[in-house]
Length: 357
Image 1 (cartoon, rainbow, N blue to C red):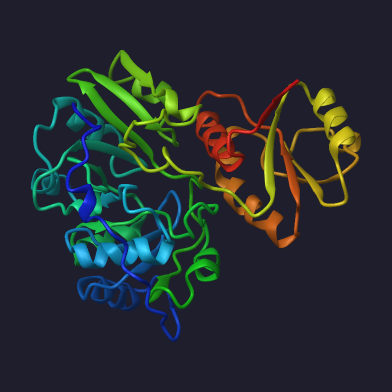
Image 2 (image 1 turned 45 degrees about the vertical axis):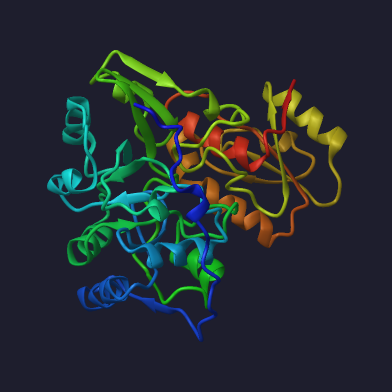
C-alpha cells in the first residue's frame, strides 16, 4: 500500500480558533451524551473519553468541523486524524481495498485500542486524512465514546490536549487545556490504558507494520500473522522527506514544559548520573520498585510494570509541570510489550535526548 503520497496538501489550513465564553463540563449520563452528540452534529467539538486517552471529537466527514479540531489544538494540518466508528459495517463506507487481515484483526481486537490504516474513500475529507490518500480507522471500547458515535456517526478524534503536550487521561486535563476553545467536555472518568491506540498499516496482504505502538503489542499481533514489522520511526526521528502516515510520527509530542531526558543503564549508574547533573529544579521519574533511598533529588514513581507505566505516564508528566520541574531524568522501560509504547512516548517527549550509561 502506498502511504507516502499526500493529496491536495496546499488546501489544508487550520481555522482560526474563536474564543468561547466557557466550555461546559458534562457527565456521562445519557442526557449529557445526547447533548454532546448534538454539538458534534452541529459542527462543534467535544472532549470525549476513550479507553486510551481523552479525544477531541468532531464530525469526521465535515471538513469545517475537522478544521476546528486543528485550531483548538494548534495542530499542524498535515498530521492525520483517526476516524472512530461504531460498527464494522462503517468500514466500507470510509475505505476500500481492505485486506482480509484487516477483518481478522478487527475480529480479535475491536472494539479496542487498535487503529488500522487503509485507502480512504472520497467521503473522508482531506482535512481529516491530513492530505493523505489513506485513513486510520478505529472502533473504540469506551461505552461513552461508543454511544456518542452511535448517535453522531463517525467521529474524528485526536488526543484532547494542546499540540505537543502530554495527552489527557482525565477530564480535568482536557478542561485545563481546552477551556474556552471547545463547546464541551464529557467526564467519563480516568482512561483505562493511558496511551494512545496502536496504529498499523498493511505492507501487503499478510504483513503488518506498526507505526505507533500501544496496548495492542507486536507479541499480540503474532497470534494472527507471522509478519510484523516495527517501523524505524518508532525509535528514531522521521526521515527527511518521508510523509507521516500516522499521528505521533512527525512532530515533537507528549512533552511537558520541563526538559525530559531518558537515562538508560542500571539503577546505580542512573543514580550516580543524576547526582552529578542535578540542580534545584531537577526531578527523577523512576519505577515503583526502585530503591528511592539511593536518589539524591526529588522524584516521582510511575509504576512497577509496563502496563502501570502506560496508565500513569502522561498524568505524571503533567504533575511535574505543576511542580515547576526544570529537568526530568527518566528511567525508561524495556522496549518490548507495552513498554515499547511507553518508551516511544518518552522518547518523543524528550526530543530524542537519550543518555546511555
